[in-house]
Image (cartoon, rainbow, N blue to C red):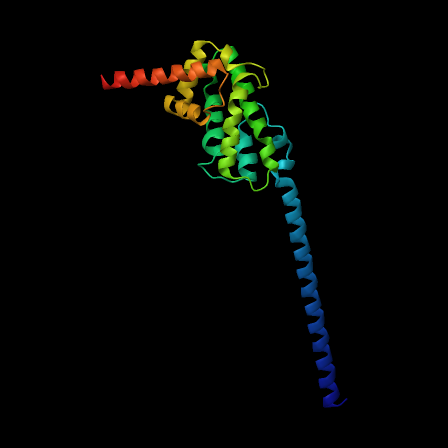
Length: 212
């Protein structure tokens, strides 16, 4: 056995080991890439809010739709409609239901579900802007307030005590801003116009008594 043959054999073994190691690395890398792609596809399928049952059919008496569906589909941040208005007041009304009569609570439950259902088409709307979501949402409010909610119960049917509770939860200034944003949409809905007029008078009275 010559020195040259030993060296040649050693070189061949080193080469074979290097090839084997490289092959293993490539195989492992390919498997990792395939696994990552499969995971992303799987995650994408399950996290697309348009595919989730609770987003396609908002859960009654729940406010999760706003943060888990609309905000995921179209992130608009803390100042967007979903978080700054939809979820905010949904949670408030859920917390203050004991302020309302039995009819008032029925109206609240139906209206909250209706407002979420109206936004479901937005989940599949590509490239929709945050302002478009806000406008679309507020334009849907009057119908949900009156005769388009799950319980088919209108704000027009509520006693004055429930109207007072609405003002307490929403706040006069926010209520007036909401009426301004829906300007024109409430035409023909007499009780909503009367309600907003009453709220403005109440606001003016409170400002007057505060100055006094």
